[in-house]
Image: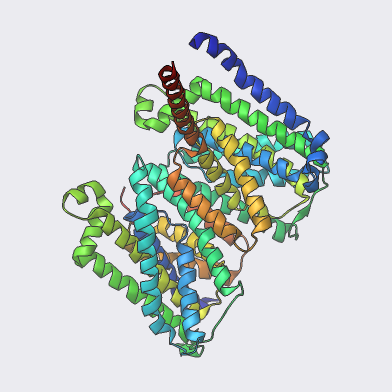
Length: 332
Length: 291
């Protein structure tokens, strides 16, 4: 029974994912028919950005338990890389450069900070966002005498496809890291770092490497976002909301599963958009309450709710099935 | 240049006192309640608006007397928040580290909620009232009277709180709960009540600080986060969990800040945060903290 069932099931997941991917890749073609064109593909692009941010955040912080509040720093670095190089280099090269720059910064930051434990690491990454933002602000105002920078835009379709590509690349990387020795090492660090070190895991190296890899996608996403929003200034690029949102999205979706952040991010982004469009006055009140409820009542996130829901459904179905059988027997 | 140094130092002390009070409140919330309360600034904002409303309202109550209103209201708010929200987070969390992370995020959610409610009530205008705005001359230096009153009250509150923590039974219970909540619970301390009381006291200090801030500067619904960031710097400088550390750290940060604004050297703001990060790396336990 189980064997015959498991083969189609094994094919089911990748097949379904492929279908979703095809549907998303062709969205610009049929989008106008279902009304997506209204926002010039901006909303789905932002959703992909948040998927990339949430998944890459969970890649490092979700498994090791080190809470990083640095996403805004890398996103901002990516945005400024785009702003500075847009006229000089082709788009793709800048995005890769932004990823590499974020990688290097994360490598440096990781090497000096990852001996900080618990809340100190969170405070440091929080401070890092403020520091880089202040440095850029200083440089722009006092050296270049400008407040912000205009960026030559890329087409909505371009931005959409690049962001989709970044999101998919993030997901694939997260998937393979999870399955590799690196992923196992990180999980044992999250479980008990001292025990992991005693088992021969080079904990510092594992943490630094993953922290740096996760920063690549944040930087690349930032560069792409900058090419879509056409203007950056330091307060906007290094906004702490960009640090907290991916964290909350990942937790809302569920850190236990790879797909948790993937479903959490777009739901959150769409919710935020819908609330701010329809309840402008009460938007952050409702949003804050939802945040708090999610943190208190959904420790496993949406992904944690799904198995529970399935168990309950299966329970109901078997009950009905048995009940039906009993009835049949009674009739005959 | 030289003759201006006393003036700079004293104006640093003036802002340092308030910073110390703010950091003190945030520090006991973290040190005892284990909530890294990034929404502390919103409590300050509420305290400031309570004073504003009472002073500019029909009875024109003196801002000093409004401390007796803003403190208890914020205490109640903090107590209820900890007793409901943070207690349920604490009992659900598998490890203390998870609770610290989750409570930081829940506090971030609180910022949205409190700010939005304040905006709905007061409408998002920057506000200012003038009170004791007369100059005071002292040894060739000029200060505004309201700042001196605010500093005096801030220091008095800090000292009173320090004595309370050292001498009273409740203060002892707070310190016991900070060291080891489980053991403190076994010693007969009602831990849920004590932690909630402690968070309430932290919020009360924020309410006092808000009332004091409103005496000499303009206030708005979005003023909170900057105070919270300032308090984080002070806390790390003085040491997480150390009350005297926060007190001294507040004055050091205040003096540094007034040097920065006096010389108006633009690179000093990044340098300030850079130093903060270096300090965090070299001595994460702060000047007076214990590991």
